[in-house]
Amino acid sequence: MIRINKKIQLMLGLFSVGLLAACGNGNSNGSTSMDSTESGTVSTGIENASSNALRLTASADIPTMDIIAATDLVSFTAMNNAFEGLYTLDLNGEVVPASAKNMPEVSEDGLVYTFTIRDDATWSNGEPVTSADYVYAWRKMVDPAMAAGYSYMYDGLIKNATEILAGEMDPAELAVEAISEKELKVTLAQPAPYFLDLLSMPFFFPQNQAYVEKQGDAYGASSDTLIYNGPFMMTDWNQAKGGSWTFTKNDSYWGKEEIALNQVIVQVMKETSTAINLYEADELDYAALSGEYVAANKANEDYHSQMNTTSNFIEMNQEIPALANENIREALTKSLDTANYTENVLKNGSVPIYGYVPNGLAANPATGADFREDAGDLTSYNLEEAQTAWEKGLSELGVETISLELMTTDSEDSKKFAEFFQSQLQGNLPGLTITIRQVPFNVKQDSLRNGSFQMGTANWIADFADPVNYVERFHSDINRGNYDFEDVDILIETAKAAYDDEEARWDLLVEAEQVAIGEHYVQIPTYQSAGAYLLKDYVKDLYIPVFGPDSYRYASIEE
Image (cartoon, rainbow, N blue to C red; front, side, top):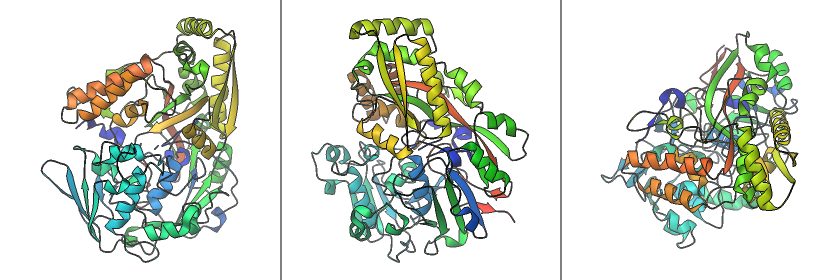
């Protein structure tokens, strides 16, 4: 099994509360499992906080509370606190039972897992959480008709999922079985040492079939059309309205005695200045910092900063003729001086990245070398090479000018990044015009998914600490850039099949990234995020790992 850098993996990365949606997401751009934004009005909820309430910011509105539809970390964070799967992560980042009574029974070949659900695990409407709830939700996840954003996580993992997703088998044939009301049997397609880690993620959570079907299309669109089996229940949230939401302690939760907070009040903040003003007025317990606000607050005793494993990049839709040209993509990639951006604009500890898999995620099983070290720098800021590739591309296309649109979210930091990108590329590539389109976070997410974009800012935070969770996204069946490179697909598929040869698997993943970015320039790497933030010293054990959704179940307010 690939060794994970525990120092990076398990940091209590509080900064992503205000930034992250990554699979969601903490940066100035926004992304998939992890996209972001920052602010808004501040009149709802904060003034009406109960005693023992935690007051936080979010980077964007929640796009959905339906686990089938969600693909971003804003949604996943909300789900991780309102819902619960078989397992969760403790404060040390280790997998521990949640709705499961204990750790599973596993067959000698590592393929069959048998889980027992807690007798006292219930939904907030009083109904028990059963094994049938998991069977129902997981079959929906792989049903091609549902088009679930995270269905690919089942592909090649659970037996028959690949065939079901391809339309060759019925979803009812997914190898998950309700042995009894509280016993669940799952058969994998091949051994997966990270399987239990995945079960802590929202796309493996259960759903109550009767309740979901009764709500119909309204399910997951407001706090009034949901039932909860997690430590908190949501109130005051409506998908159409947005702006804020509140988590209230769930009195039906089996572990309610261990939950210290009565409320968590979340406000969407798109302007750093607004969050800081509220923080200084003691109306917020946390405020994310960016740009000039970092330097201005470094002397503050509440100041914190640390690196995380968010990889930021720019998507390029290869259905656009100009972006289908490899020389044009190379020119765009090599014209962007990301070091200039991190040092002079962000100024929060973020660093340029010249690949996709971030530093500190995982180590070579044989040598201990970081993935980024083995894969190397696959791109660089090289104006001479960029302009040479640009001229070749223009010649191949038979044009003298190219106009492209860059889509980003409507946050303050996203605007700064887009304007920086626009200025550099137009200045470095004669004949290029970049138009910026700022849209709400959920609109950007939908546009990236359905291909209605030319270029788009994005980021990705791993769902589990393995480079395959990044590299597999280059595959033609998953990527959002509408490209299809057979050499990349073969490398990824071969790596996934090499589960019993750790070193070979590692080498194949390294090569897949090198080919996808270093040869085909499928996306433009920009930077690896760090986060700077202010946090009141009376807030204890607010847990947000550097990848995946945060958890409020351990948090408390020290009196």
